[in-house]
Length: 53
Length: 517
Image 1: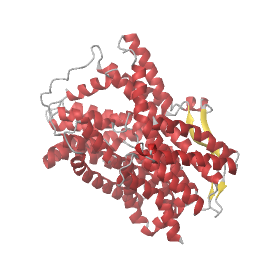
Image 2: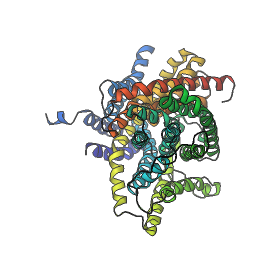
Image 3: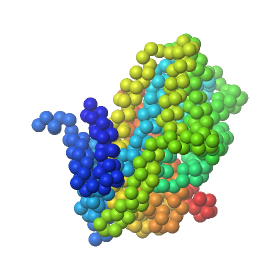
Image 4: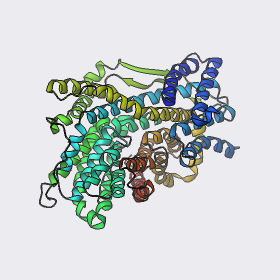
């Protein structure tokens, strides 16, 4: 389930990063997009069992 | 200062390798940490702003989308064929073709596994063929090692060419210019892997006995691989040579040199499902792939594509990233995924008409595809994002500057080993090309080497490295139900992989010295 959620998040990240970074070149929007990807990465790094603590 | 910048540039790759090798993390976890480290280094040390960082990461996702669509469609078609009993019929046909152990080993571990890599990949050849090798009478460790090294020639053009398309995309070389010479360079790995299988199952005498047959089959396979690339049919450039090799070996089993009474064919096959019907999905795919190369059709459908364009950007330290119009385009006619899906749908219609269809097969194949491909997709996507951040922030350029110290001759021999390292660690030729493709490109430019030759060296090493990667040994050991430890398999397979890549390094050096590329 964790991987399916991550896959969906990455599918959302593509338009988000593209629009804010490449298309609009908006620094604030790009920062928000990158922060969301960073949060996803941190969530993937933390093992399943540890998240309950 | 340069040493510090070099270390920061190297850190994402070290984190990825360390996460997988020492911490034994799944690839997606290591890739997630590697992206964080790359992004942190790009922001803090390389003067990369959030706009460039977001653009580079989106570029990575564009590239991952193009490659992973091929993976999902290829796994789906294979899962459907397997569910319908077609894979079982094809395998049994091969198992029943000869009683000569050497010939059977070559047929199964070298040519048929190459064919399977062409259509599916991702460990499927090891999972399907290793049990057949055991049925044919070989020990589990020999069986897995033989398939691991035996199918490694087919990995770059396997999975419908996903690794080939990746090296083309990340290095920006022309695919039509790279394909034909790369196919010719695959001559050495094809010959070497065939002889390696003979050595694993028959030792020195096996090599001597198999050599004439392997040489003839290899020559024909290389010629076909080359011709397919000249025709622009890279997606079927492992599948069809694998099939041709199987045909040559089958014909050899009819000659006095290799004739031996065949074992009885395996039970459990579906009634009415002949070899021709079993092979139908892949015959359809071949025809559609070749049709898609017809220039008139390509031109007429050139507008039917999805692609994003990326602007020129620069870091605050002055590193410039060129604009990319229509980056990683996904064409409706030309991209392998629509062809794979169309093959599956036509198979569905024809099997229904023939009464061979199994209710619910599409749903089951889809569930297998989701289960098998989700983790790979997340891992590959994050890895590609990391690789593009490394490339677009200027880190790859710093790594390449350091590689200049090796000198051109040493670098040419070492370049396939870089491909091997990436594939060995990540278990994937595609991932290796993403990780190290840009680095190899920068190094080639810095050392005034042919970018085509270095791109070829990267993916040649990655192809062999992926075949002998630990994940393949793990798949083989788990399919055989723990009859053998993966460590024992690795000890058998790895020396062949390292020696094979050394031969490729020498081949690449000779090609450069002779000015062939």
